[in-house]
Amino acid sequence: MQSSDAVRETETERMKTSIASAAKLANSVNSNGVHDAVNGNSEKALSTTVKLPKDEQDIVRLIGQHLLSLGLNRAAEELVHESGCMLEHPIAVKFKTCVLEGKWDKAETLLLEFRPMLKSEKNLKKIRFLLLEQKYLELIEDNKEIDALTCLRNEITSLKYSIDRVHELSGLIMCNNKEDLRMQASWDGKGVLSRQKLMDKLQGFIPPTLLLPPNRLRMLLRQAMDLHRERCLIHNTKITEESLLIDHSCNRHNLPCITKQILTDHCDEVWYLQFSHDGQKLATGSKDTSIIIWKLNNGKFEKVQKFQGCSDGVSCLAWSPDDKYLLACGPENSSDATILNVETGETHCRVQNHTEDQLMMGDWAKDGQKFVVAGPKGQFYECNLNGTVLESWDGVRVQGLRYHIDGKSVLAADTHMRIKSYNLEDRTDLFVLQEDHPIMSFDLCKNGRYAVLNISGQGLHLWDIKTSCLVRKFRGVKQGNFAIHSCFGGIDDSFVASGSEDHEVYIFHVRHESPVAVLSGHSKTVNCVSWNSKEASIIASASDDCTVRIWGPSDSDNEDECTYF
Image 1 (cartoon, rainbow, N blue to C red):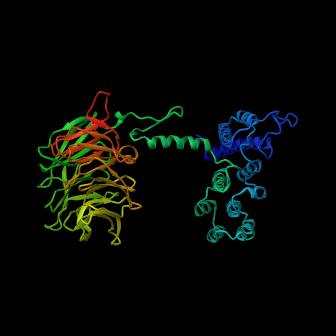
Image 2 (image 1 turned 90 degrees about the vertical axis):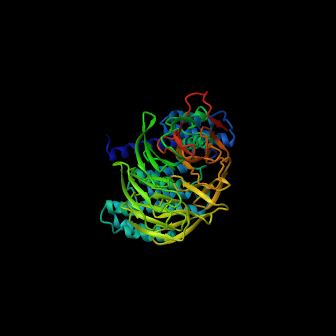
Image 3 (image 1 turned 135 degrees about the vertical axis):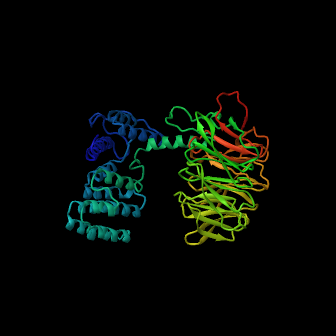
């Protein structure tokens, strides 16, 4: 394996070769972008020049840049010669070469030459400041303190730009060694890496007509491919390799729309279920008061444990981040919550603060050391792993509860048809969103940006938590006054799945209000849906028909349990 210094030297040589080739091509054209000579022979001028439209010239430039990046210098040269297009402005190419070679004075001189072509004087000042900053840092690293001070006082300060940054730079001259300098300056040190990063910054202030952004063609192609996938409403597979030669397309049968297994061990309505974070286990809770743990084995879920839940049934389940513990809450009139140790099969602890509490829902902090429980009687608690109440908040009639991704605050839906954020550390609360009808439940996507809400009489709504904006109202879900629990899932949380009082399971793409698929099979209300976070092609649904259905992709085109839209 090459050392880091060897890798840097190789990268430097590659860049020099590419830039030298670009400079050669740039020097073979005149200021109008037309070649004066072929193969360096000034006496053999092109007899004809292809006159290309502006957009075609841009394409040629992008292709030429890509050929140079691949080391196909002769092919790039032939392309430039035949098209008569200039890839990059000669002065800009020389400027880039000087930056990467650390020739700062020459770079400043060249900068002044294409000064009239910059968008503004402000951009010129920004470029000069960044150049001098790199020069100053390299002088300090070379132990040339006097030269560094001269650069700071006579060149950087005279620009009268970013005074705060100038003050930061002045303190760096006191650094004890190179490592200290690099750490305090958040800098990679003298060499090709820091200079290339500098050039990337400078690129933002130099018009692309003078200097093409790096790897521009590859970036455009990647953006096009990403856009195709984003516009695909049924994309739910991990792509390891994708061809540029054909448009992106997905098979609808990759969606988890076919019943693969029906779990019938509960003897009453199944109210809640949730997959473990590792995707290997499924916890189901029922009105029959039992909690069953299922484990995935050779594509089938097998019952491995059974716990006795709350006396009135199980209305909420939540796995700890390490999947060691399971938090279980009951329906109305349940004053306690239970923490089960799934590894030992024993009850770890119970939370019961007041007999008048209704602890109907809960969630885990991302560190797995704390959890919250709450209910509609006006109080919720934050507890440690032993069930000891650490913090509490009075007067909040909670309908739904989720820890925020920041790990410090808790999002709670209340009986005022709103969601607020509660910081239990500094005892502050912030308004998040307001609905016009009761919020029965809600779920957050993995990055914490979006929430999906089940709204009484309205169905399913998608909200942007960051901007407090209603993004979309999904169509089809029948939601009355009973709690139905939806979820995000699929690749990049691109889908939302929800149960419904019409016995169906609905799957939506987050960018489209109509369902992409409706799953039939249950004979009564579907109370809860959970999407496997590790296996994007598996979802589970719990129903009042006393069953749990495991859904997966179709094995053939003949299976018809799902309606596609």
